[in-house]
Length: 342
Image (cartoon, rainbow, N blue to C red; front, top):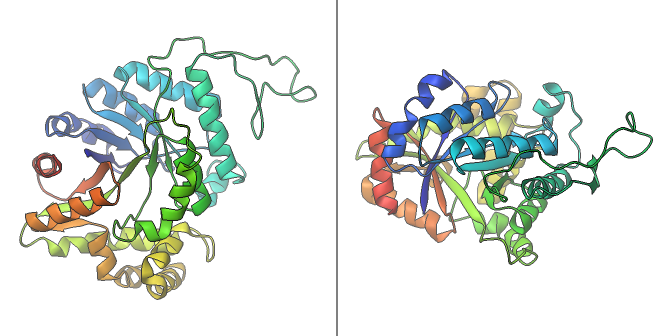
């Protein structure tokens, strides 16, 4: 099991990035960089490549709608070159509120687009002359544009001809596609004891079609971590975030986070959180997040308890433990977690 954490997009990214070398010394294996509608991730990722020597640097996630497939491939290849082969391309659909409201692009066919993007990116990294006839048309067909487009291959030579592609997926069909074609899976609000009930069938279906040339699917999951005899109250820090996702990330009937929490067995609680959040009662929505969900989706407690939670994630198939350290000295805490997973 490898150790990861996420560099969030809020605050001063340069100040945060300057601490990452210490996290690398603590044993961090993978550093994810988030992108929403604040700073872009690739700029920060390039800075991190210069500040580190060993840690893998991944986007979690780059929205599939805001960049063309070729640009996604170029970005990953550029980061791979600057980092000496340490890039991970993390992709996701984001959501219609951001894609249509911020980027001004129609949110359609997310699964088909993701599949085609992965195919095109891998072709580009192999330095093939790229042609594609699907949702993405390369080059543009006759009658579209100027008519001057022609098939091309990437000018430069990528460090690797296969850069790992991880996909953020929650819905059944998307998870099935991820298990079939991606190198890694980025779920959210992952409860190891109940994950198979939600995604087991989709993973099995995807694995049945997986190319044997691909390595086993990496699964990235975890949660906030704190170790001590008096840290249980820190679980409540996750309440506003869970309420935001379960209650506010999408309208009723179109919120994957709400659906996942419901399938975990918290259907009534998820409905209440959503009702409160969408009516503007955000503090009440946060208070309605069940304590059991906070416990199961985190690694907060005495060392023996955290050790048991790590074992539960490992047993569920998680290969990359992604944690958010809650400690005045995150480097020290990351070092301790690395010791526990080794």
